[in-house]
Length: 500
Image 1: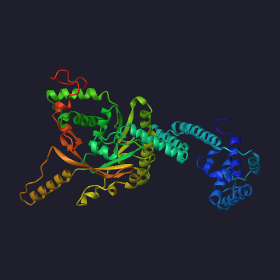
Image 2: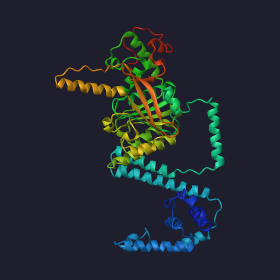
Image 3: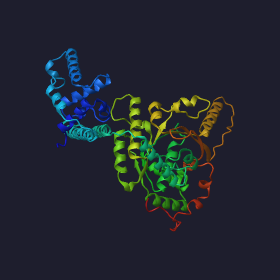
Image 4: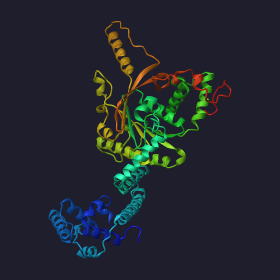
């Protein structure tokens, strides 16, 4: 059997359709005309599809008639040299149809169909190998563009080669019962996926589950990056692997935020290196702890959907990395697989690509998103689904959409504006706003495919860029208690941690 085609198998499948036309829908669910190797077989299968679509008999006479009609239509519409049609829609060799009619039909076509599909994928891969040589050597394409081309073409092949079978009720019932038993064995725990890091949010969502595309959106300065970093920190502390694509902030700044949240050392102090001996000690312990964790950061600042998929797959296929979550900060800074596209189509491609990646790797993918500034003109500035920038595809593909909202941000802005206006008029105005170190925040669940929507209250601790549970003081207790489980047996007087 040839590795890239088998004429006998193609002939047997087409023969089976002729003798049992009702199976064509099963065949069409897996195969396309181009999956057949022989051009005549492609033409016959394509004609069978047309006859099926027009609800006409799929037999020898109708196939011959339809092929002739198609050829005559193309001949009349083609104004160039008729020789150019050769190989495209040339005279049909009826002997091939006779060979198909004389072939023995098969009763179980599944294995034959899979063999045709497998051979077609191998031919596509062989063709891609030739294309790689062309773009890399003959066309002298820049390596970055060549890689993008290869990743995009390979992704198309992988998508086109994927197929799934319909499940009948016995299979669905068995799978559902197995799921319920698995949940029962977990002791009816409310957390079935990866933790969000917050008890109330976990209860409302059951965590971020395998295959979920989660969108976390907010206006600037609301803390969406801080919230997702808090989520990442909780998961890596649970010995889970997390990948962060930071398109706006370098990895060093992300690390400073993680350290501030972990050590309760104010972020500004970390940025300036203004630490006392106790803080240096805590920082050393925290850094030593984080060095053992599975956190992977890509801060290149620009990435397209193909590059992101390739990098995630590379890390996720290594079981030692225990990848359980991917975070993209943020979605609107990504690009699609091609240049010059309509932006809405590009966002649609990105959104769909992230959802398919989550399903393929069976992990949650969390993408941050910007909101339209139009909400700033409303009296109630709490976000809604319609505020999502380029919202159509995002809203459709996402399993969970969350909004981060802090009312104090707007109160502070309003008071500052009033102070300025009063000053310009020469009028004294005393602001009633009090800038507190901790303020209430809301995580608004605007969409949840498998659960309720609603609002979860958190507390935002500004100095540490940290969100904490609103119903618990666990993260607000004295720092000595927070660190009592960590190894602090080294000297407390430290001028500079060695690992820095």
